[in-house]
Image 1 (cartoon, rainbow, N blue to C red):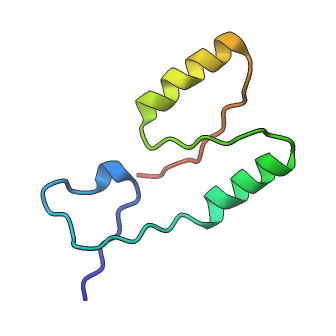
Image 2 (cartoon, rainbow, N blue to C red; image 1 turned 45 degrees about the vertical axis):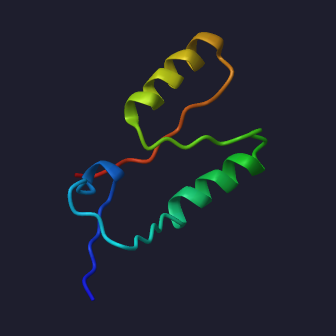
Length: 75
């Protein structure tokens, strides 16, 4: 069995996709989401596309109706 690890969707090769994929991002994401919801957040929205996130963040700064948080990605 071969195991390949890709830390972000952008790093996954588009030309050689496997028959099966397993995605595990449990610890940081769910801890952050649970903490935000426990602190009173109405919802949590996750983005895999940085440009989409930045557009939403710009709108949020204009309306001042949500907080922006992110995970750091080391490359």
